[in-house]
Structures are given as structure tokens and as C-alpha cells.
Image 1: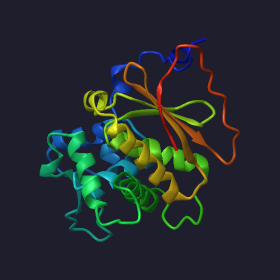
Image 2: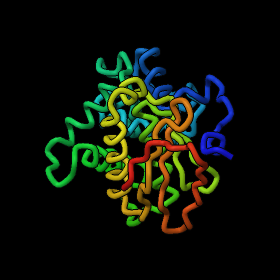
Image 3: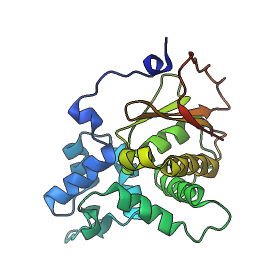
Image 4: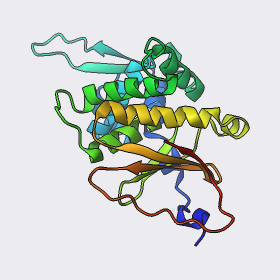
Length: 240
């Protein structure tokens, strides 16, 4: 079995290929008004916790803002979310540039790693506030959500030691200049390093089938799965 066949995936439906973060942002932009988490959950069909994690990153990136409910009766006002002017159009290049610019003051890491650290901090504060330890499984789920906000469709394999990155919003640029792939590798490394779950990126295989890239992960709770390779298969890896 070739490496391409090893990572072949069924063609996803239109709903599956649309990144969750994009659905949240598009819903807010289309409504043109502030919505509650419950309304966003109903409008996107996603779990409330998933919606909250995406909203946290979108707020951090300046594409969504939080406004208090205009409440006239007693009780704590609900928090509402609405798209900012920067949310349209939903431009993944702008999102990546915003993350890199915000992380520019971090001189201890490369730009990509610093952006990854920043994304991870935002995820941890909203998804697991006050948690002393993040499990490997939870850190991978956070990475999937963070990548989707940047415009990727991201899934994991059954063992949870590989991330499948498809629908890459930077595919055209990456085919011309692999530096963008190196940047994404650094972001993943910084993301997992910040969470301290013990997960690391062992290798990133670039464009192994169409626009599909695969990040191979080291997990402290799993032995790494063997990566079969046949003669003639030579995907471009970024080794850690």
C-alpha cells in the first residue's frame, strides 16, 4: 500500500469541509447583530463547548467582539457576540498575519512558535481555565479547533497521533514557497509546547495527496504508529 493510499480519505460533504470557526464567523456576519452562545450553537449545529472555544479565539484575533446583554430585569446580563468590521471578508491570510504580529514581541521563540504559544494560551484560558494539567487528548482537540479558526479542515486518526490538515487556505502559496509550511510546523510545535501535555510534532508531511498534509505526533500515552513508505514515495517532511 502506497503512502498516498495510506492517508486517502473519503470525500467529505460540503458541511463537513467547512471549518467550524468559519461557520461561526459567517453566521455572526450574516445576522449582523449580537448573538448568544445558545443562538450560535443552534445556528451552526455545533456543541456549545466547541462554539465557545472558537469564539474565544475569534475574540482574541479581533474578528469577534463581546457585548453585554441590554437587560432591564434583575439578574446577570448574558454575554453576546457579534462580528467586527475586520471579520469580513474571512481572510485566512489576515488571521495568520494578526497572530504573527501579536506575537512579534516574543523574542524567546521563532515567529511561528510564538504565534502557536499565543493561540494555545487563548484556548487554555477559555476551554480549561484554571486547569493545572492538560491531557494529551485535550491538547490535540484544542489544536484541531485552533487550526480550524485559521481556515484548515482538521481531523485526527483513530489513535489520535496524526493530524490531517486539508482544505489549506495557504495551499497556492505553499506550493510556491515551502516557508509557509515551516511556519505552520513551528506554530504546532509552539502550541503543544505551551500546553505542556507532552505532545510534540515528530514530522509534518507536505501535500501527500492533493492538498492533504499530515502532522505526525509523539504522545506520551501512546507508542508512535509506524509510517509505511514504499519505493518512490517521497513526501516532503519537516522534521522536528
